[in-house]
Length: 421
Figure (cartoon, rainbow, N blue to C red):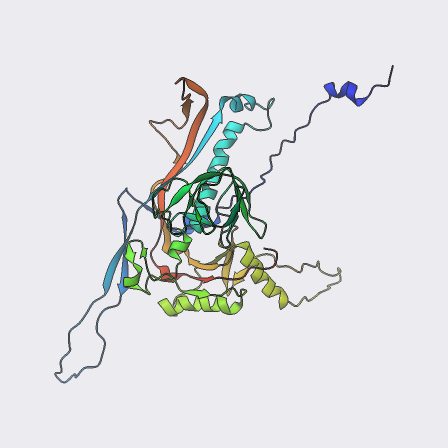
């Protein structure tokens, strides 16, 4: 008889499954968290929240004749009111009973998939809200198409493909946001390559280059999305800002900005952007409250500037030379302003934010969608009407992001990106 081989004993061998689950995709929620932690929270009803603003100075300064002369007529400070309405957002999840049965104990699985999904879904919902907060200029746009072929969408930088995630449903709109061409489900996302791509399960008829992607749930021409970073930090002098006409109140509703015209980031751009805030609001305006918010692309550019002028001094106190690290670690700043980076940020911008002027108007904070105390709902077979072996739950929130001083921040736009990005 032949010697016993592996094929003869494989039936009794134990299969090892590593108990550690590794996350293989990003889910930054940096900007959303900063606004939650450092911005204001206003609980609101479904009516628009009013934001009073001291818009124009008043009174009439000048010389006069103190010997009985005419003092002249006077004036007064002008006050205006901005307003903002909360918008509803949801994150829905479906799980089959077989998933629950097959992972409900340590003897069956390394994790209880159903229970784990509760926590994982909340994290992904926050990541979704962060993505649209970064990309939406109040219109729901989360990306622009450069070209499309065989359901693969090459995306335009800035923003690229960072505004979407695998499993998300998105709509394709014409560039003028008038025509909704249809929707597709995202099957794959590449946010690392220089040419960022999205793979969908379909290509809506009529889709062309320059079309834009809009997150699910928005319909009709000129959809209204969350008032994100690019809504409040804008150099626009037309359109509306929180229901105030920008043209009427320009430049008081315009964020100071520096157009880099595709040049690389320099200290001069940083100083100019900060000084434009001081020119708009006075030299007493402190930069101590500012945060320099940017994508890792521009963080790289800033570090490159430091490397080119670095001098490494080796000190030996008798214990041998210090370790060598040619890159920067620890706290990073721009003109004393702390740097915060996120992969969801615009790759060609640096935004200086004073979050004490930002906040959330909240009708319902992030929590389970609930009906009569129930948060888990059975699904039903569409043909028989009988219960299906699956159930549904969701998180939802009704809120929007407001700003009461668009000139308390500034931004540098149209920056070039370092090689490799």
